[in-house]
Length: 74
Image 1 (cartoon, helix red, strand yellow):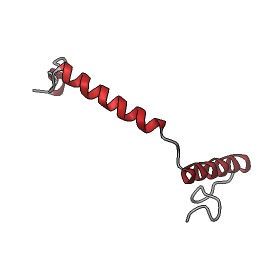
Image 2: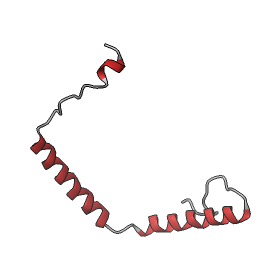
Image 3: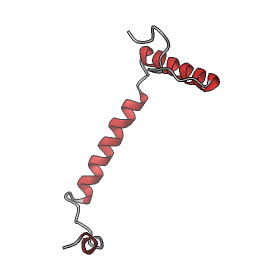
Image 4: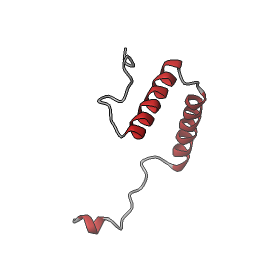
């Protein structure tokens, strides 16, 4: 069978709809929990450095090799 012949056919889901719903709800709950967690200070600092480097590169027309200010990587 060619690819174009199979395009009109839909496969049946491997799991029943109620099982898919339960899994979806649990994934949403886990994701919501992760999103509510604060960003670690070190990550926030690195993001600020990257934003500053990007703003500096845009203003000056230059690009740095790694995008971090000197001493940014430890």
